[in-house]
Amino acid sequence: MKIKTWLLISYFIVMILPLLSAYFLFAWVTSYHSNQKVEEYYEAFSQIQTIKQELEHPSLYELATSKSVIDNLTNKETTINLYNADGFLVYASEPAYQEYRNDKSLYEDLYELQQGLRSFVYKEPVFEEDGAIAGFFEIKIARDELLKTIVRRGWIVTALFITSFILIYSAIAFIVNRRLSKRLYGLMDEMSAFARGNTYVETETGKDEIGELKKHFYTMRKQIVAAREVIEQEQKVKEYMVASISHDLKTPLTSIKAYAESLDDTKGLSVQEREMYRNVIIDKSDFMKQMLDDLITHTLLQSENYELEKVSVDGEEFFDMIVSDYDALCEKKDITLTACNYVYGNYDVNPKQMMRVADNLMMNAIQHTPRTGKIWFYAISEPTNLGDWLFAYVRNTFTFDFTNYAYLIVQNEGKGVPPEKIDYLFDPLYQVDQARSKKDAHGTGLGLSITKQIIEKHDGEVTGLSQINMGACFICSIPKR
Image (cartoon, rainbow, N blue to C red; front, side, top):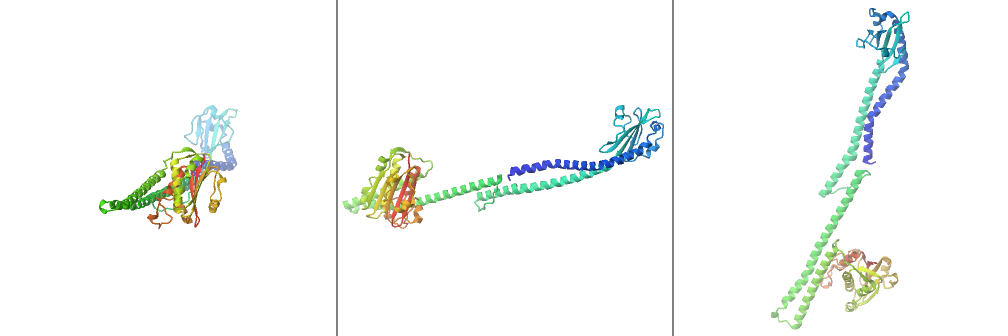
C-alpha cells in the first residue's frame, strides 16, 4: 500500500473516532431510554394519580390555607407547584421556581404526562363547585436513574474513546516508525556508507514511495560505481599507454642519439656508412612521428564531443581507391593479394580517416601473414558478392545486413588469434604475443583501436574473427545512405 493511502486512512480513522463515540453513546442511551420508557411512564403515572387525589381540593390554592399535607407528598425526586387561577405561585416544593406564569404557558399541555430527559411533568386545573377554576397543580418526577445511566455510560464511552485513541495513536506511531522513520534512517545510513566508500548490502525496496526512492538510489549508485570503474579503467589505460609509449620512444631515441654521435667526422666513417646511419636516423624519426600522430588521433577520437566531418562520396569510385595500392607492399613479402570493390551507391564518410582504416587493417594483415600467404581485401554492398573466398567459420559466425550496411573486409592467412584474446584486439597497445621483441614491431600498437573508433564515429561496427592455424578476418560495417 502506498504511504499516502495508509496515511489518509489513519487520518480518517482518527477524525471519525469522536463521531463514532458520540453516535455510540447516543445509540446506547436511546436504546436504554426506549427500553425503560414504558415502565417508567406507568410508574410515574401511578405516582401522579396518587398525588393528584390530594391536590384536587380548591382550598389548597388559597394563600391562607395550610399546605402541610403537600409536604408529605414531595421528596428529592418529586416536586409540586401550585398556582392560583391568575397564575401566581401559591406553593412550591422548590423555592427558586418562578413565582408567576402567564396564561399561555399555564394552559399548555394540560392533562398530558410530558416525558422529558430529566423528568416527567404533569399539569391539571382544579375547579370550584360552581365550575370556576380554583388553580393549577404541576407535578414533576425526576428521572434520576436515567440520568445516572447516561452519566455512567458516558464515562464508559469516554474511557473506550480514550483507550481507542491511545491504541490507534500507538498503532499509527508504530507504523510511521516502521514504514517511514526507520526506513528513511536506514536509507540515510546507506547513503552515508556509500559516500564514505564503505561496503553495503541492498535491502528490500518495497512498492511504496520510499521503495521507489530506494530503487532510484540503488540505480544511481550502480551508475556512479560503473562510472567510477570506467574512469579507473581509463586512468589505468592512460597510465599504461604513457608507460608503453615512453618505453617505445626511448628505444628509437637511443638509436638516433647513438647513430648521430657516430656521424662525427673524427670517426673516419665511409660514405656508405654515413648514408646508412642517416637512413637509420630518418627511419627511427619516421617511426616516432607515426607513433605521436597515432597517439594524437587516438586521443582525439576518444572525445565524445569530437565529430568527424563527413562528405558524400560515390561508393564505387571511393572504395575502388581504398582497396588499391597495396600490391607493392604484399609483393615484398611474397603475399598474394586479392583486392575487389563491389560497392554501389552514395555514402557519407570522412575520406582521410577511412583511408587510415584501410591502411591500419592492411598493415596488420601484412604483418601477420606468412610469406607466400594470402590476403583478401573486399569492399561489398550486395550479398551476391560473397564468394567461396570467405573463410567458412566467418560465414557461419557473422550475420551480414546488406539492407543497411556496406562492408569493408580484410582477411588473411596466418596463425590466427586465440579465442580468449579476440576481445582484447581493439585495446590500445595490446599485443597478442606479449613476448614479441620491439625489433619485430612494425606498428605503434594503436592501429586497431583507432580503426574501431573511426568506424564507430561513422555509426558502424568493427568485428574481429579468427581461428587458430587458419587466419583472421576483420569486418567493418559502414551505414548506407
